[in-house]
Structure formats: structure tokens, C-alpha cells
Image (spheres, rainbow, N blue to C red):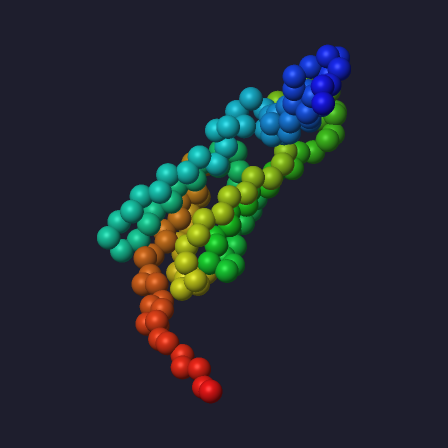
Length: 148
């Protein structure tokens, strides 16, 4: 069946195009033009541990949480800004600092506990020390006999 030419070749691309563009740029409105640079991570492997460095510029220690659940280590950084438009410095005309939440998860295995992982924050870099732990060995494959 032929479609009228008013729809063009890409009917659904044109219909959903604006929504797709909005979704791609949503983080830019929250974090500005540097959104792609947030939470950059380096992972270094050593003989007995992994060293993970995460860039979190502008975040304080109390704005960062680390959670270990089901073998996943989740790093969350949340920042809020006061909305007072008049301060001691005068009326706020333009504000380029952001408010929002960043989150990233890493699979570290089921064998680790919270006390195994070390963390420190210096100069906007969160450094994690994650020990290597032997994975639990699965039992050998065994055949189960069927009666009857």
C-alpha cells in the first residue's frame, strides 16, 4: 500500500525525532556542556587488588555514597543548590553551577563485604581499593539418575 507523500519516507523518525533529541540532551540541561566528562573512571589492576579512580570535581565527602548490594558497588554523588536569588554578594543574575545526581555501578563479586573496600576522596578524585577475591568454585557437573 502506498502512503501519501505528505508523510515523507521516515514517518516514524520524524514523529519520534523530537522526543529522541530531547532525551539525548536531557543530561546537558542538568550538567551543562561538560556532561560527557562527569564521573570519568580509571581502573588499574594490581596483583592482589584493583584501584579505581573516579573524577568527582566539586563534590564533598558527605555528598557521595557507596553501596554494596548483590555484588554491585554503586557510587552515587548528589549535589543540591540553594535557590536564593539574593545573597550577601548581591542578586544572582546567572548561575552555571549544576544540581543533580550522578550514579555508576561496578560488579565486584559476591564475596566482598563493605569492610573489604577502602575509599578516600582527595582533590575531587574518589579512590577505591577493591581486593581480588577468589570466586566461589561451582560444583562439578553431576548427572542425576531418573527412577522408573
